[in-house]
Amino acid sequence: MSLARGPAKILTGDIFAQSSVQIAPVTVAQGDRTRPVLKIQDGCNNRCAYCVIPFVRGHSRSLPPDIVIAEVRKLVASGSREIVLSGINLGAYGRDLSPRATLSDVVCRILEETSLEQFRLSSIEPQDVTEELISLVASSDRLAPHFHVPLQSGSDRILRAMHRWYRAGHYAERVKRIRQLLPAAAIGADVIVGFPGETAEDFQMTFELIERLPFTYLHVFSFSARPGTEGANLSAPVSATVIRERARSLRALAQRKSSEFRASQAGRTFRALTLAGGGDTWTPAMTANYLKVRIPGRWSANQWHETCVSSDETSVAVLDAVSFQK
Ligand code: SF4
Image 1 (spheres, rainbow, N blue to C red):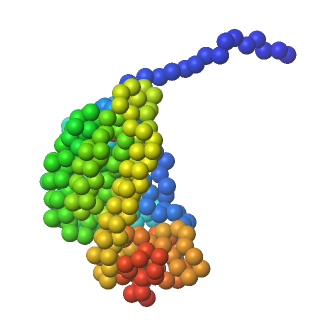
Image 2 (cartoon, helix red, strand yellow):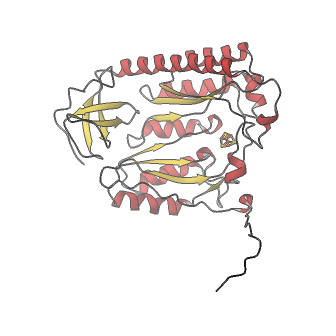
Image 3 (cartoon, rainbow, N blue to C red):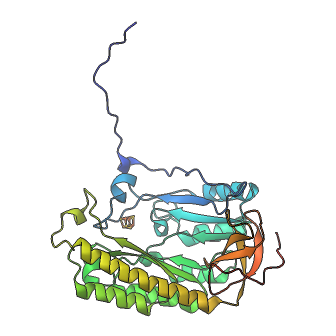
């Protein structure tokens, strides 16, 4: 029997018509998996000149708070001890809901209505790192002292060209405030080097800003044009050689700052959650302030241990003779 075939049909949808958040399949803390990521927000209403995300993920939309609570409870019931709350633009959480809510609101509800032992917030845009949110993180030992705040550039001229909503001065104030209220917090940033038109002077401003601020780690990205974005059509591209050199120099700076932070924490005792993997005689673990440590012995993942941070990630933390499990 032969089947008559017509021309293939391509089905399309309008991503901007999406009004719901698909709960991403989360990695559940079973076996040796830990730190599941719960996506509570999707899409973005911003239009950063280098970013294609709004075109593929649509408008910002949030998972209603009652569903967030139900999902957190499910993860806790399945054994999760730490959850990472994430979103494409997490700081925009709740603005689309009726009644309107904020990220701080849903964080408070998780603290009050669930028994989750620890949670961590993923990347938050600088303008959404509010005094309320920083104070909230500082007020609870169940919220990991960890802020990841995209910087992208330390030059106001480049930030404007990127259509970023803040200026270097505002950014610096926020980061300094985090450090003031949370002296041991992990503070990370994303930075793009080689955005079209970035001069040596613009790059120097970025370098100096990063040098001045108390970052504990950095993600450095080399600009690459994404078709369909404004950034792809801008003139004055930066040469690949210059981009490579700028990225190299920022990564070296990041490495130095990271080591300095680790050295400043060396000798302090923290609770750390074991992760999967490791060697014959050690198990990797993560502290609330995002330091990786090595626990002596082989332990299953997702267990709390008291550990002493050493100045070198590869050396074994020695104070960790006794573990405790909640
Ligand atoms: S970089 Fe972030 S804030 Fe900017 S458009 Fe992309 S997702 Fe939105």
